[in-house]
Length: 278
Image 1 (cartoon, rainbow, N blue to C red):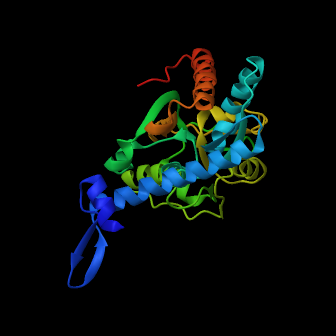
Image 2: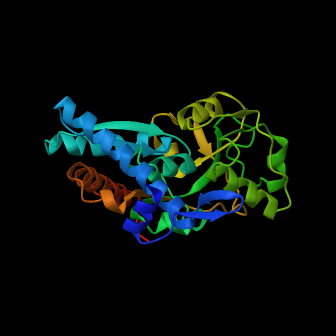
């Protein structure tokens, strides 16, 4: 069967040696794409059997749920688009891997293309949506709130609530602190893929956290969180994008969802006076 597949594809899928056999680079790619295709096929079977409106499997980061997603859903409803969403939230690497494996139809969130394997990036399609700053925040009652003379070295003296090690926001913060000769803080609390929980804890406790800037304008912040004023601390901005596999980009439900997300992003960018496209 392997030889038949190699003949059909025109490339060797396994490398044979005295130690046995292992997948060739082409074989590893073929296996990955086959898994993705089978996952999508299983999802299609479930949809056809249900005889209901299509389910779009969407991966996202928690920040998107607070502002962009509700507005996009209202736009779908206004256009009488009968699409059901199945949401999964998680850190960037988890969501992109699930998209790559065929367990998601699209992903809406942060993407760092310079950290992505080239073989994956070449098969993805991206629509830039919004750009926002990454900032440090705390309760308005925190001793550092409203101060304009905060030294970066002071940040290590306070308790933190942070996303898990390896998450993009935490890596960005730790890298910038190290650039200023400050050790990365050891968080009092770590929360995975729960931005609301992180903000609530920062709101209620004397802890610092790191969040996208536009989150401070949501009801979760409730006017009780503020951005720390530290001009010397330069965290990289966050680009929120819509991403899907090239083979899925012509799905009708996916195109409708992308359209309302772009409309939502355009409205957000107009209000904020920024551009969402590089």
